[in-house]
Image 1 (cartoon, rainbow, N blue to C red):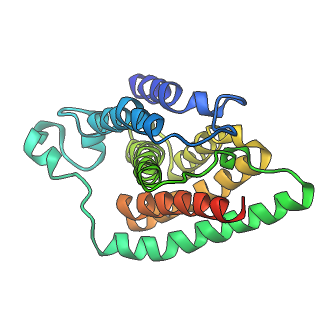
Image 2 (tube, helix red, strand yellow):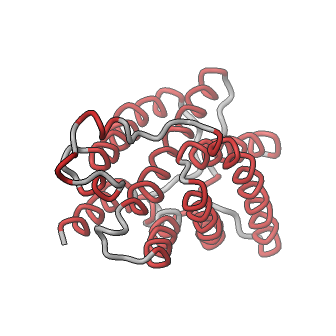
Length: 229
């Protein structure tokens, strides 16, 4: 039961506010200073917290990753940190084009109804420092989301006593709900993308590949918004 409480508290604290209509991204001018504050005060501490819970000595995540409880030490937990490798490269080459195609398809469908994805109504930066802050923010946010929705949840499936399809569905549903601020098509985009990201993670076990692809996709969305605004 403890692992369910931990996962639920993490989700509520880190992601649920963004899933409530009116609390997510809205139409406003981009501020590099505000984005830097968000990264330092919110995104990075949240990412550190998730990884502490994944790698903590004696934690359930370490055991779920194949380390016998009696052999869990600080040294071998550090050795379980994901390292960028060939699987990540393959993952990026597959994931990024699929995320882009999904985004384009959803944008086309939303244009037919005249409805937009509210999450993209933040005006893009107009300066180099602004774009730098935005790119850092996109990658940190992507790593945070992939670390929780993919690595954290999927690595704990034995502790959660869920089958692979069960934890797959849990990850996709929670991921979609925290993007519901973007409206129906934003939710649909997250639903399809979340399912694909789960599949790729389970296939390649490559966190960096899906996180980098996720970050690049978000940056590309802002670039397209800057071009066509």
